[in-house]
Image 1 (cartoon, rainbow, N blue to C red):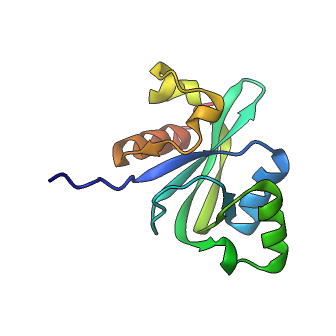
Image 2 (cartoon, rainbow, N blue to C red):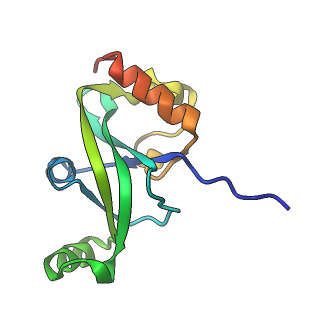
Image 3 (cartoon, helix red, strand yellow):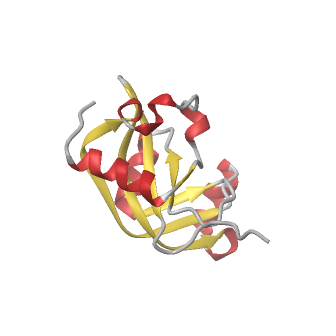
Length: 139
């Protein structure tokens, strides 16, 4: 009997600039996809730039809130966008220089754009992206 391995992290693609700002200001990401969210998982944020999709930062999950646990104001917004709840982060980090997805191990992948959203990552993959971002790979 095989045990399902829990992902070390996920890629979440943020489509709107105002939502990018919201994630870094509120340390909260409203999600619509189902995943096995766990405390201490790393979420890598991707956003479209003029040179292509790029990693713009990351957050470490503290917990997640289901729709019914959110404030009335948040529920209205979630229902408008068909979101299921919110990931709350211990902290979020915005990279000084975005890291192009095509400068990472994902360059050989056929996954692009919206198909990166929700992609599960191993510890090695997360560490690889964070290491490149820290070294200042540029957009």
